Length: 358
Image (cartoon, rainbow, N blue to C red; front, side, top):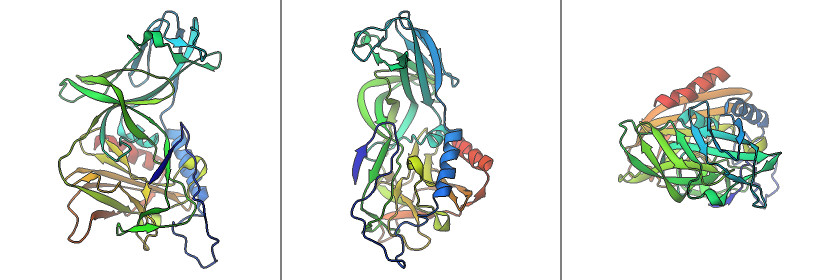
């Protein structure tokens, strides 16, 4: 799979080399004319996604800001410089958005998975920006020995001390003209579509301290997502997991890259969320949906799927508790069929919030 990394924006990527279609050609990805429902799903996410919070303080003196979640960010004195490297004095505006629980990971499409499909346990995701008179600022290299620190109310249930690596990421889209069908067999398709993965996390130097219900880590950059995460190492054999949406699937991508059908998996008991964003290509009828990275899901893993879709002007969703079993003889995958039922906007939001308790 080829990837392109595009900072802080979801875009639609067009596969080149489209062949002209006859009127009786069957589209490889169904629902490709239901863009109105894609816009409806996008409006839902824009309404309910975590919001950015804004603060002001004197850059010369430094200061601490506290988000509604309880996250605290402490800036030392003279922490900012202008784009040309000159120091900043006087009032500055700082904005921040944090993502601490599974429901916000869903609503912001910021799952916890690496670029290679490995699961991460999150102890706090955040993005911070600063400006002065509408000019974006950078962190002062001179404060690198005592950088801004972030303390988020996410830690270990037992209060045991542990270290977790730091991860960086940006919003990502991927494109391919090769993929897998509903039997996990290689296939290809030449059709216009886009794929919104949300984010890929890549490890960077740095560690956070997880202790007694809180996590503290250094903030090394502005304008970039940072995540204090631990790799979830599972020694069990891995398999590929497919999810079939049947006639509730909508393969059309709306403005801004919003996909109207989405499949999330919350691992039981840990702050780990996966977005199954790889679309099944050339599916048999009733097998439309998504699949995991190849051989990335540990057999024996328990958790909860949230399948959600917008189609024909309505929302559909289902929560399904599962434990990944071994593939059947002769197969290299396991699959789940979802029976999505119609829900209201309020009911869909309630289902998303229920994932926090799984």
